[in-house]
Amino acid sequence: MAAIKFRPAGDSALAVEFGETIDEQTNQKVRNMYYALQKLKLPGVVETVPTYRSLLVYFDPLQQVPERLAEELLRVEMEMDSVPLPPPVLFHVPVLYGGDGGPDLAFVAEHAGLSEEEVIKIHTAKRYRIYMLGFTPGFCYLGGMAKQLATPRLSVPRTKIPAGSVGIAGEQTGIYPMDSPGGWQLIGRTPLRLFAPLSKTPFLFSAGNYLRFVSVDAGEYRRIEELCTQGKYQPQAEAFTDGGS
Image (tube, one colour):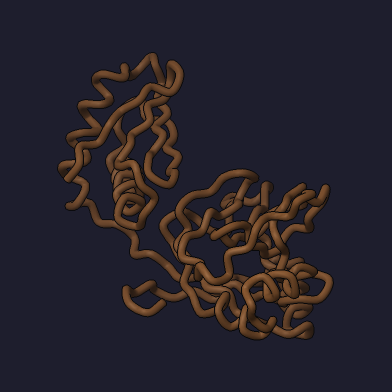
């Protein structure tokens, strides 16, 4: 197993790197360390932020120094397999494909040499790992999209993309959690609210879990949208198991 590396990030953070590649095995080590630190509560550690292949550990410089923290994190790595972790969860994300919410579905289909229905079938068949959150609050960086759906970004980004828009850029797919500029090809929209800043848990999804997109019609979209507005809807969730797409 490759040794982890430590890199200073200012005077109050340490980046713990678990590898050089983006893959599920490396990201799983990040997740393991993240949850182990939640359980162990090392003195001086104030926040941890998981990324594709590293964990950023913020610390109070009045309670910790980088050298001692690195030693403690090495010890955590040796023991973290014994720390019970929450099993990953697979969330179902309802999406209304095409139409006003997915104006680029036809282009994605044409680029891939597929029909729009085939694009939707392929896009909804996969289970996507949430590697990290970033870009905007609650934006999930997902892995696992079928390469045949890869489509270049827009040559001229849109100045405003509505929250909930589901898009494709290169070999990635994702959901815009809030209104923002962007250059992804939009294929649909979900009524789910990925970011609720006034909530005790502002992010609907977290790194290490999985998403599966589910195609819904306009009537079901409006029903779920109304429930989300009332704060009465939670996406369907199930335990994630290995195997399958």
